[in-house]
Length: 471
Image (cartoon, rainbow, N blue to C red):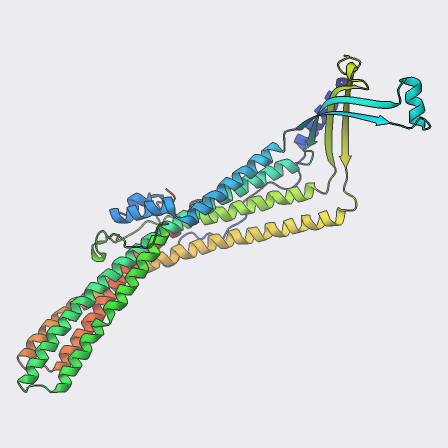
C-alpha cells in the first residue's frame, strides 16, 4: 500500500495552508470615553482603595464574619460560579475540535439471493454457494482542516465567554459584599434610631409628668397636658415601626448570607463605626481593568468579535480528511488472512455551501451587528462606572459638610432642651417651648443617625464602584 506516499504530503500542505489563513479581524480595544479625572472632586493619586482586601477595608469583626458567610453560602454567587464551570466545559469542547475523531466498528452480514438472479448465479459460479457472507473490522480517523480559522475563532469565543462568566462572578461578589455591608450599616442605623425613640419617649414621659404637676398647681391648663401627651406619643409610635424595620432588615441580611431568616449579631454601634476622612480613587482609566462588570462587558465584546470570524468562515468551503483501514473477508476463516484480508481507505471531502449562501451571509451580518452592540455595551459600562465613582466621591465629600452641621445642630438642641426644662420649672417658659424643643431634638437625632448611615453607605459605594471586593 502506497497511500502514505500521497496522503502525507497532502496533509502537510493542508496544515501549512490552514495555519496561514484566519478570517475575521483580531480583537482591538475600541476607543473609550475615559476622562482624565472624576468630575466634581479633584483626584491626582493613582492609588485606589479598590486594591485593598475587603477584610482590611471593613474593620468590624462582626461585619467581616457576615461577609465571609455570604461569600460561602449566597445562592446568587453560587449560581454565578456554576456558570463559570459550564463555560469551562465549553472551552474544553472548543479545544477538542482541533483533534481528529476516531471510530471503530466490527460487523458481519450474509446475503441470500435467488438462483435466477444475477447475484445468485454469480455466487454459485465463483463461490460455489447460494449466499454471500462478509466479515469486517475497521478503524477510521476523520479530521476537519481549520483552513479559515473557524475552529480557532470558536476557541477564542469560548475562552472569552469563560472569562466573561468569571468576571460576572466577580461582579456578583463585589455587589454581594457591598449589599451585606449596606444592610449591616442600615441595621445599625435602625438600632440607633430605636434607641433615640426610646430615650425621647422617656424624656416625653418626664415632661408629661412635669406638666401634670404644673396643672395640679394651677400654672397650666389641661391643654398643656394634652399637648405634652401628644408629643410623647410621637416618640412612642416610632418604636414599633423601627422594631418592625429591624426585623425585616435582619431577615434580608440573613437571606443574603444564604441562611434562614433570624436575628443578626451586632458589633460596634453606628456612631463608633469609623468613617475615613479621605479615600483614594485613582484615575478613571483604571476602571477598565479593576471593575469586574466592565471587564465582563469587554470579554463579551471579544467573544462577539470572534463569532464574526466564525460566521465568515462558515461561508467558505470546509475540508474534511478521512483515513481508515482494517480486515475484510467473505469467509470468517479468511478474516485473519494477512495481507489478503487487509484494506485501507483515504478521502478528502471539500464542501461548499451553495443554497445556504443567503442564510450564512445573513448570519454573518447579524454577527457584525452583535459585535457593534457589544462595543456600545462596553463603552456604556465604563461610562456608568465613571459616573458611579464620581457620584460616590462627591457624596462622601458633601456628607462630611452635612455631618458637621448636623452635629452642631444636635449639640445646640441638647442645650436647648435642658434650658427649656429648667425655665419651664421656674415658670419662665411655657409648655409650647418645651414641646417644640423636644420635637426638634427628636428630629435632629434621627437626622444625625441618618447622615452617619449615609456616610458609611457612600464609603461602601465608592469601594464597590471602584471595583473593590474581589480580593
